[in-house]
Every structure is written in structure tokens, then in C-alpha cells.
Length: 175
Image (cartoon, rainbow, N blue to C red):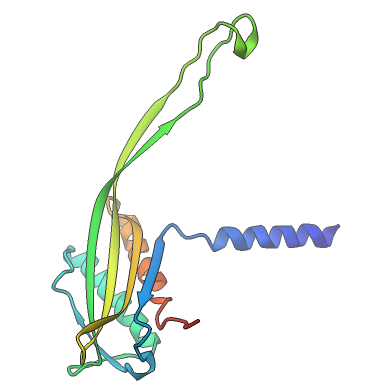
């Protein structure tokens, strides 16, 4: 019995720790030879962030690329284009009726109240495009969304986390 409880607790812990607040996805060109890419150069023309967040994104991206064996260079194999955007999200929540019930319980007459409330916030996304510098074609793209744009403390923690999750999918595992 103790063995089953331990397995249940271990699987519940694993399930909770593997959950991520981010939505991350990636896509790649089947014909790309990812083993041939050794150098990169980051292009930030489309990275419309404040300087603090821009540094967070670029520092973590560079760190992730270097752990993948890529080095920064002036004549690169890959051009890396980084973009960021955000959108306004409106959550609508509603509660079940509550209150006092009269004769007949919940199926009779009585008073009940339903409560509905909304919350508005901005959610950010980061897009990383890897472009083959020789063919000038997109060979890999990673997208991560779910950054709490409205909270500086959250951004400070979340930007490095989401960049690591995006780059976890590079190089792609071919099936």
C-alpha cells in the first residue's frame, strides 16, 4: 500500500512541476541541415521592447544559443530575428448562484445571486526566427506566449524562463 501511495505522490509531483504557464511551440524546415549551423548573428529590428526587457531577451537568447554549440559571428550561418508583441486579454468569470433558498430547496422559490466579474491584462509573446543566411529562408521558428507584461517582477522572472523553453525545441528532434 505504501508503494502505491509513493507512486501516486511522485506522479502528482511530476505533473505539477512539469506544468508551465507558457504556451510554447516551434516549427522547422524538413530540408534544413541543423548540424551545419555553427555561427549566428542576432537582428533586433523588430524587437520593440524597452531596453531592460530587450537586454533580458538578448542575454538569455545568446546564452541558450551558446549552450547549443553556436557562436556569435560576423559572417554567420544563421540570422536570428527576434520579435515581441502583446495583446490585451479579458477574462470573464462567473460564480454559481448562492444565497438563501425558500420552500422546496433549490427547486422551489427563493433568492439566488449570480456574480460575474472581468479582469483585463496584457499578455506578451516572443518570436524567434532562425534564417539560413545563404538561402535567406526561414529554417526554424519558436514562439512563446504567456508573459505577464503588466508586472515588472513577473517579466524579470518570466522572460529568461520563456526564452529557455522556446530554445529547448532547438535543434528540432526529427521523427
